[in-house]
Length: 231
Image (cartoon, rainbow, N blue to C red; front, side, top):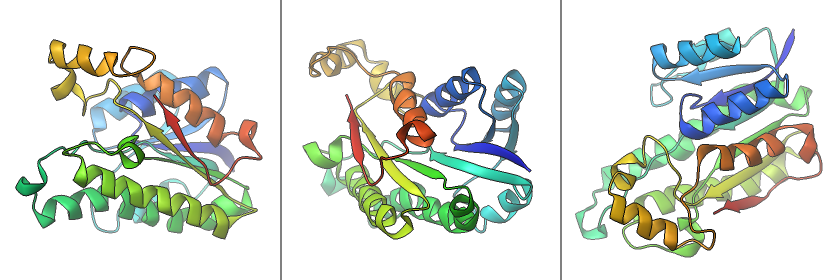
């Protein structure tokens, strides 16, 4: 059986950067994404196996378990997220439910499906939150509440699954990505966001991916239950 790291959202800004960084370190991966053409292109480039999967579909882990039944999973990075920004008065219950399912419920399905595999291999799980959970930004009620749940899951599972599985979370500020493009394509807004940060720039996918690579590998073998900001 081959030992691999598994990346969900592998065609996104962070996921693809993480895949490339692990490839450069000669570590094997299984890539997972929704868009067949995009995930196939990235997998061919890196000579990685892949699955096409929508984490919002019912029983989506069934096909993944078949794809990975001959794989020893060393770690899982859930590089999936959303940017749901609205005035609270304009939100609906469905907004909160959709964000909660994508950001939290789906990853609980994944961890349950592969918990035995991760335990056997003393694996690592890397989740993603947002700086908005702890800083408190206007219009971020939907995403901040969903990601706060992810942080709660992180510390809870880190305790429950220790010492066999490590669970950590990355909480980045706004970074260049497909989902952030609607905000960042406004040059004035993008410059204002950059200036609001001490380092005077917007994040790149590689910034969070570098931390994810540390947390998912044995380099961080004595780190668990942490929520670490990248901004």
